Image (tube, rainbow, N blue to C red; front, side, top):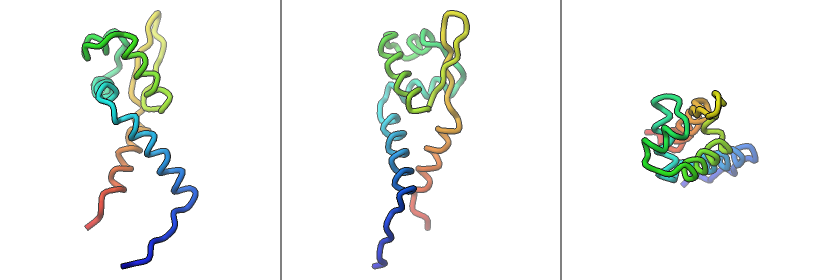
Length: 103
């Protein structure tokens, strides 16, 4: 059995970032929001209607996704339209591939 190498401080920081992102993906409501936003920008009302949830619930989860930099909101008149942060979601997708054993 080969001797394990120690994880560097920068690698630990990267792992912490992955864990934070993966924890945001661990909730079915947040996954539903991301799935809806993958089809295009939506406001809170559209997300509520599509997911069958009340506005406070959707707003709470959008807040968490915004803090995790997985979605962004842009004010358009009286409402805010949300979109996914493609770069950050792609980084999480890449992290999964890094965790998959190579042949």
